[in-house]
Length: 448
Image (cartoon, rainbow, N blue to C red):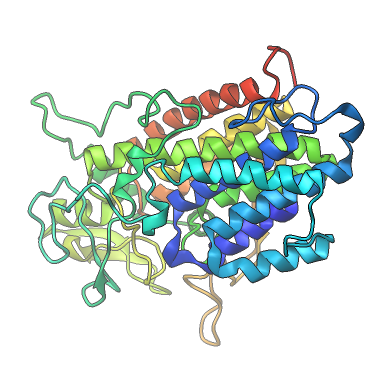
């Protein structure tokens, strides 16, 4: 399970233009559902999502070897469907595991893996994501604001990246609210309050003013948090970040294939549902990003802000304000409210806490001096951070909260988008967790 999870994440890292957070989250849900369904045939209690217990094998066949082969054939077939250009890489992984993909393996585990994968693939081809159409929008969404003009200061504006000269951003997967969820009753995942409003119903500038202050003077730890959690292009994106955490937990605890089939099934589907819920609200509100909101609110004024790499913080014209981000990223290509980072992280945190039976995480990462991507060490500059910075998370919720805060440090989200995203993510995580139990342990409400 860990090997195939890493194959998936490598595919995401190698194809940033064709993926992004939503496609990544769905892929995690789809691949791990295929693997879970294959594994369930070799368990005494679990049932598959597509065939129920119809593929159940007799107890004497419930060996680690059969389970590993079944989940590998399921993963291979599903990954080839999701990332056909990387078929050779997946075939190499199968070869390293000792499995043939030329059709010569007619063993029962191989057949079960392919059977469950094909059933999940067929279901997900019609789930509303438009996978077969390259995940292109099917809703006809058009931004109110073009890249070079603000018609409505409260609505999302695609940017030209690099600013002012590059190609306009293209809205990422506006159709995602249509994707069939796993554990949620509908695509929204629940109610959210919306961005702050004035008594007359107009939006309040309090979020904008608070974010301008929060991003006006970042110390090195705040900069590093903004960078560490950014998970932009060339990364595994926010959903994959939590899969990496789950890999570490698995290795630390010495998980079996049984443990990981269940863990990543629940986690992958929670992350997929988090993507559906977050994007449902994003395109419902179509809310402005900080870079447009702050520029419009403070147009004609001088405020404190980041002056660019190595230039520190100081006075800047409101209309020239920029977030602490890589210059080729600036801000994501979709609306602000609510925060995807916060929703993904809170949902994943809920699943990991539930699976392990504790909030305790006890993980940390040390970022070396001068290793910043935005302000790296040069012959003329010591770089950021000035000295090593260690980020530590005693609990899963602490890591999730830091992920949410990081987007405010980096000028990507407002406080309401962050906090409301955390609340929604926790609810989505619960729903996915309990839905997963209906397959993992369908005849009991007790522990795994």
